[in-house]
Image (cartoon, rainbow, N blue to C red):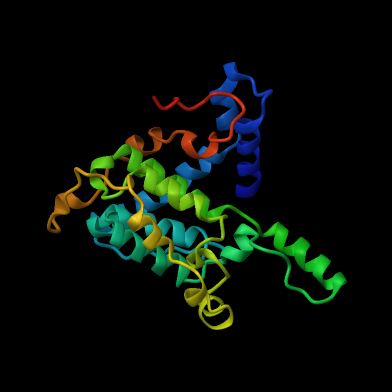
Length: 254
């Protein structure tokens, strides 16, 4: 469903025949924003029960490494201000996506099939194609929504989120290659052969919020906004989804 939704969104954003008078309804009909709202709502509810009622929350999706990682990371970002810093965010994503075993190769369809025989390769490729899904990109979209709504609460800005999202399919950085930590460290020796995306983002200019000041942990540092404010603030990430649109969507830089 997520993969089909994203394909429909790309079609709407990048098709020259898209009816502009029905733009908002066409975007909503793709269900991409609905999926984003569902994930944000789950993360908010997780943070709510944890912070307000001091209750443990069990989060588990069908596979355990897709929606589980998305919801848990977003909930921790709402609860802990440290994870809204560049260093904290990198640590959190490495912990709950990379180390937890999110299959980047499988979900992002990096590279080619790895089967030896032609017949088994064809079957394997068809099976892998059915499991291809923009899970991490969807998480990045959720991050964009929160940072855009509360920019003062983050050390990084929406450009940081955009730059990280661009690295998902570039295969430039080893952090988002292979299907597990074992594949990266033992089989492919990725860490010694590639650069870290976090080092790249740290050195790149214009990705930080100059007015951000990390304060000591306090109750008010929990970012638990009213849920309707969060869900009604969800909008199309034009800088990401419309960057290659044949029609003018983004403002031109002066």
